[in-house]
Image (cartoon, rainbow, N blue to C red; front, side):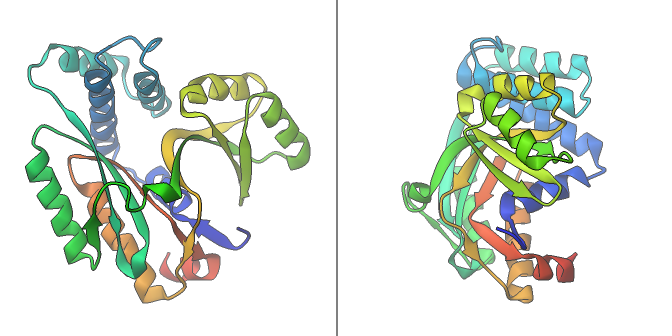
Length: 247
């Protein structure tokens, strides 16, 4: 992966540079509400998805009142959210998984289908691309002066797999262990820069044409901007020299 950036890294860097705090808080509140509603519990000790959502909100300095309000509202409102996963192919045939929450499956499915078609891709059926992804917990930690020694500490803290990305190390763990391992890393002195539940691609697809990369990233941004979409995952891999040209 030296000299390349996969989509999860690109998206994370974009989000970290996003100054629109209000928009970020709205997305986090929605994530908390969905985790509460789908898990049918406001208890972070028994609902690990809610625990991760709350931890992410706290890490973004979201006010405690906002967090509690999102949970209370989700527990008290009528109706239900359906947690929905969409699969498809974007420009250049990249594999895409979308995690969404909706109170109207037909409406959301049609709108997601439209985004795919406008972007030069196509929405596919269940299982079309999910075989190339696996659910993981992802924690990124600031790289220390002695990465080899740091990696040994990370393994002792519960890391199952790791990958060096520029000045960070990506740590992969079982989804249900994300919060516990993150806490151990911080207790052992690691500086955690981000953490989330993801779908990790098993095989990446490299796209080197600048115009095609711009088209793909625009398509993925449109998916991310849809109000019902929680997360977007793709097996996109871009060489660093291309990243520099479009930055």
